Image (cartoon, rainbow, N blue to C red):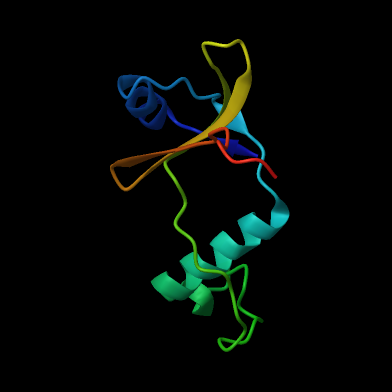
Length: 105
């Protein structure tokens, strides 16, 4: 479970996006984030390290945790709805939209 603080929620709101204060993430993403964070900060030697017994050579997906992520359905003028993904990371807002193809299968 990810709980966004007031600062992140206000940034999202200032960009015109409403974010749920609590969202679920998979355990794979959570562990990948722990491994990446601890390797970068060199805190794996600390007794509180979550990954102290994982070999440094073990591969881990490198990812940047977004400040905000929102999945939404956007209604088109013809009444159909298409998915849209909005991500805010490092001060940038990325909006991914699905478009209907003009080409047949």
